[in-house]
Image (cartoon, rainbow, N blue to C red; front, side, top):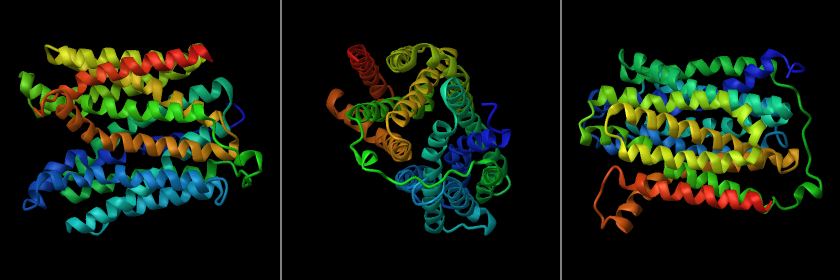
Length: 385
């Protein structure tokens, strides 16, 4: 790491810091519903938060296809930050209150956010090697979680002035753009050779499937926290927000633990992490008080954030440098798609296992079995080599 200046490290970490851009509008949704769009159904207004996750998918794939090949790494990162900042802040800059106009801006913003996700991971793998790579990947996960906290707080404070001011929190990404222009190395464009046109190893697809199933199975525990607390009489919405933040705290802790953990056990961190996810989901289901639920969410994030960078690292280093961005772009797209599909996963669980009756813990119960199965299958596959 000593070969790379501090600005290079800052450039990489700032990309992760702004990944959680959707969290900016989370605390502002209620104010937007009542102050701006009271005549629009609440589920429709929630698209302001969820739509960027969907449009991030083509952004991930686009960045994976062009970064380092058609556009220089520095140019691609600058373009992504420009889209992120420009379309992210525009509703605040012009005071936009038209719902459909805001949705259009959110869709474009999501594309820029999606571009940053694979490039952040790919650049860390491209720049750092060995133990330094593991350490920086861990720091990056911690920065991603910390960024979620910071941007959510900033969005909430700005929304308390005017709901549309929440988008002004995206100006923090200007720092990322500035350090990227100065700190990122100027890598030459990579051209595909015949060898690089070879098919991606089949093992990569297996790891990508594990990532998809993992985020889809974990999301119900995150988004149903407040409903579980309400049904069990644990507390109000304010306390639910505090409890939910323990998931983010777990992600920060996991980020710092990832480097040493991967250095010791390597790929075995995946079955270990998914076993921990099963335990965390079990604790969520069995939680009898708010403290147990908060601890369960902390564990859920801690173990899952061990798995996510492990998969990014494994697939990114299993292919040639020219293929790395494309593979990690696909992984990032699959991650976002898994998060989006969690809603349909919960509906399917209710229909298949609970006679169509809805329950906030139904999908979490099934997820326990899914995580155990993934831990067993991935452990068996790694044992076979």
